[in-house]
Length: 326
Length: 297
Image (cartoon, rainbow over all chains, first blue to last red; front, top):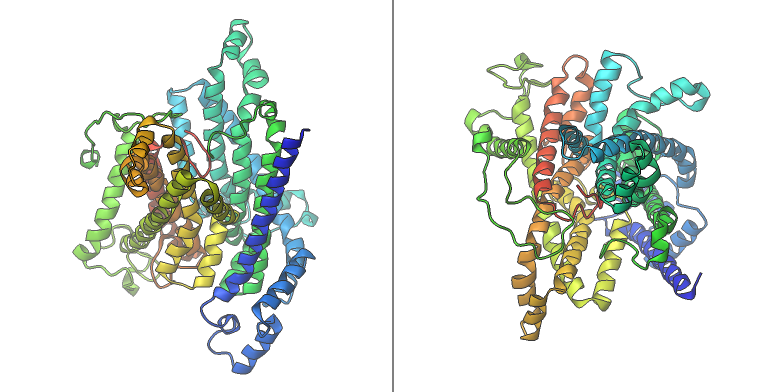
């Protein structure tokens, strides 16, 4: 590894740290931007002045802002994100309990999305500009345009209400057995998978079309290799760069979508907790959860950045990092 | 419906930049695109006209029309309180269209000049702008919108702000990338050499050339904004609950889906058709692919 490369990585890490610092300050100072007294807003108009004063001192709102910020940042660095005012649970504890559900939901949805998108993209790329390609593209557009909660509600309507295959609501932990557990997650995962499927199919199809035009594919065809072999041995890997970038971006977006899907299906994940905290105006918890979500998002994207050369070795040698000015 | 679809005169389009995919602006409109345009025209027309014409109040409740089936009285049926579903959907359309178009307009008005200037000046200006963009894009769009909506309080304006904030950085990136590509052209260099003021270069030389890409992305963004608004309303956050919204209607209709699926299907169809139409039409104009997702069609 040469010095220039090390320097570049160092600068990236610094920038990442700076972004995270600003992100956490924003999360903190958002409380000061509230119109009015946060404690009053949390308790509502009916609360007595005494109760408000108690909550103020509980939240440390009577201390100077910068002192509170120092306190808060110190806490965050040690993994202390404050306490939920509704439940008295620490935000860290909430995360530890609920993150596994969300992570599993996202992983499952990605398995579904990729399982559909990769074959659909391969077929569409090989049959470019035929009826098959167009039909797939219409499906993709529809998936891209349907909000998750609409998919979810329709799934509940068909699969739960009419066919009774899956429970409409609620979560069964692993301890209830693999079957009930998976069937409590399958509909939310499908609802969540729609957008990702559409994005993945489009990106991979476009890259595959590009790859299939290359001379070496022509050579492979001329050698009489089978279509399957050409696709999987020669064409697929060089076409994965766009897809992997897309996965990084999408997984971040999905953390947002879980808010809606988890509340719809009553899954005890982070998204559901965030929706509850927002509705109950539990600002401390909102702060903590948003900070964690944003941090995960930034780190996932950074990870994809680091993985580029692994996915596509051509990038390790060339200086051209990513397409143009992006 | 297809007959009313606006068919633009075929204009030969010069291609000033190397594009991965050529815009189909001049080409024939496909059936799907005509249907999309038709739906949008119908929606906006209905939204503006129907409440006035039929004199039906979307908030008007009536015991005798509870769960009414579609018919002459209620074209698309009525909900659990006897409120007309079509009138409610069209009233919800007003909110969605207002928020969708409004937030995208504001996002573009902030983002495009910032992007152009950061491309033109480079250096510290670009560094600051790109840092701000990075920070805002560090939040998943829906999470940021959700947080902002909760902090700002329930109102249509606040939802618009909550959606604009996560959206404008993408316009910055798009305008910046497009401007950077233009800056290498000779006519811009020439314009610079003869001493044209910066603002004039931006307005007369750069903006017209990047307008198409921005417009196309604007259409996709309206769809996205409507999607975020729908999600927020579904969660009951943002738009005040007394105002009918598509997301809110779906949320309220969930309880009755066993007996009266129309309560969720009507607003669901409005949401889906509107976003699908916007996506299909903008795909016609998208040149370099989607700057948010990087997706290339």
